[in-house]
Length: 323
Image 1 (tube, rainbow, N blue to C red):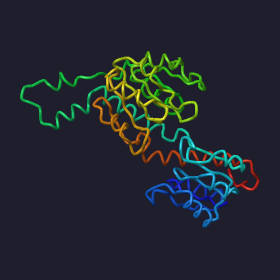
Image 2: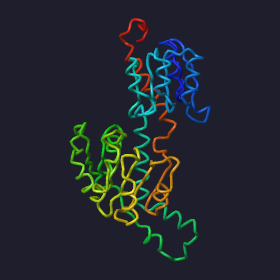
Image 3: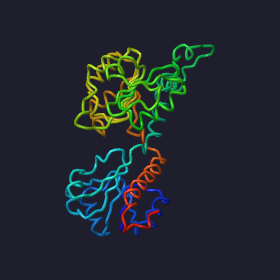
Image 4: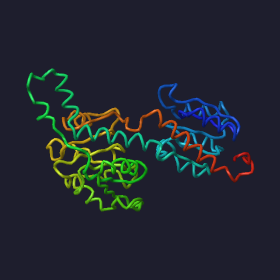
């Protein structure tokens, strides 16, 4: 079997696929500087004669899948296979794998670091120091930038999959109280309390959004939920912007009805005028969709994807060299 890999992929896992399945053709999108479009991907699949594809951000459209319906599988190195026409693949009997939890540690670390920066007024303090405003004998910094500790806070998760649980496992040792709302998950730990969506917003000092984009979640976090937040609460979205009513969030932050927000995702990337209004607010800490961007994430998704593929083919006689 020839496997075309266009995702960044660790050499160790490439070698493992080669040993077990035959040929590996490695053409990562990063060498191009952008994801492959459907025509480029189709040309590559045709040229290589690939029997399977491992992708990350490329446009694996219906057109691509219909033209290469013989593919044995499509591996998507992402938490959700949102760049793949999954229904078309299913229609052709093509197995689609993805890599949930590949960036759980990365996102959890960004959550902790940036929430602490908001709580401790790190950026305003840094800006004040850069302005050379520190006068002899003054206690301005001590008084003006005194913040709060993360320890003792209640953190509420909307969505409690791999990312939410990783955050919970880290912050409960500060210690923090953990609330979550997720209709598909039971409490994995006695210290994690499952509550209603309304209670997450009402009772939490920090509200973290950890939802995928689906028909059910688009716009789910609306004005009525946001209005339930405490005045000194922090809102965090490192998931997807589409699940939040951004105009309602903008109004909430402009009125200083909550303390602050950490935002890593936006309705438009690059941002439009309204997104930039959010980004430029003094009570918003914004990053350019990098919460899950670490070199280690590529190692994680390579290992997770290989596990999915190898487990899938374990029972097939034509791949009986799988150990």
